[in-house]
Image (cartoon, rainbow, N blue to C red):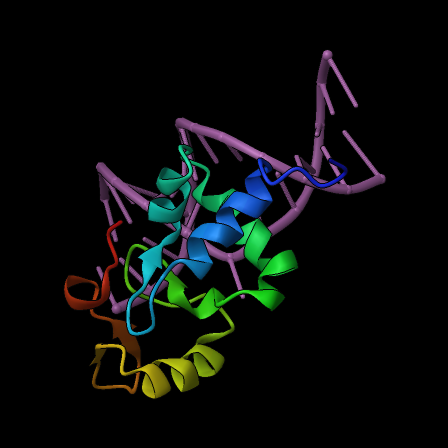
Length: 103
DNA sequence: GTCGTGACAGTAG
DNA sequence: ACTACTGCCACGA
């Protein structure tokens, strides 16, 4: 096919879309889910193709959402009831102990 | 075939 | 909590 679903991009998007609401996965976990360690490549896919996927369900290993998109992700987390941990300065992070989705 | 880039991860100070 | 550095991988030019 002209667009084989075996591509790294299609697989990464497929994994992200497979994450249920209220749960999240780290970039490293998504990469591992497709049999790779390219956590950074996953971020690249999100930045260019994530517009059609639930990119907010993918966060860093520290629990922080995609940089410069925290405010946008927060709206989705509140709507989906994702467990969040707030710091004193108003900085939040996803409670991976509760929201980490494991296939 | 090589280089630069990046919505990362882990370790060290 | 922070910054700095290194290591890793996939993509586009």
